[in-house]
Image 1: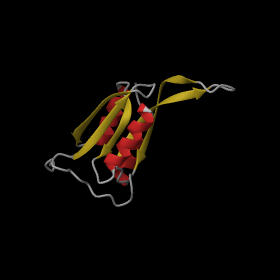
Image 2: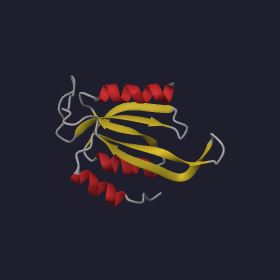
Image 3: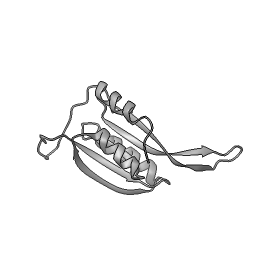
Image 4: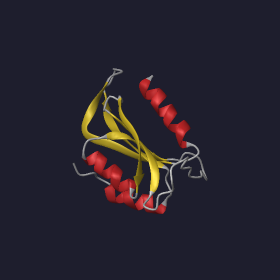
Length: 128
């Protein structure tokens, strides 16, 4: 699957310092119903910043010369968590684009002073 707007995403990420990205399934709303239907092949990609001027924190992990450390949270199109791990990403935008092309949904975010709280909230909402 080719992502429409991937060049725009690359451009925006070069012009802005984002803390992370979400790549989520898109649902078509059913009129007069609380249920939606998955829009096949559609994924919404958003960039975010935890808080302004957040400092990167690597905890006990060494600083990486090849990129920043990110938390990666993956889930199904029904928002059930399938995996969570940390990864050093040199090009997070390229990582997100490849994940979307392979049919994955999730959230990636730099490990910062605010990321642990952010990902805890996401998991609480998803797990319930």
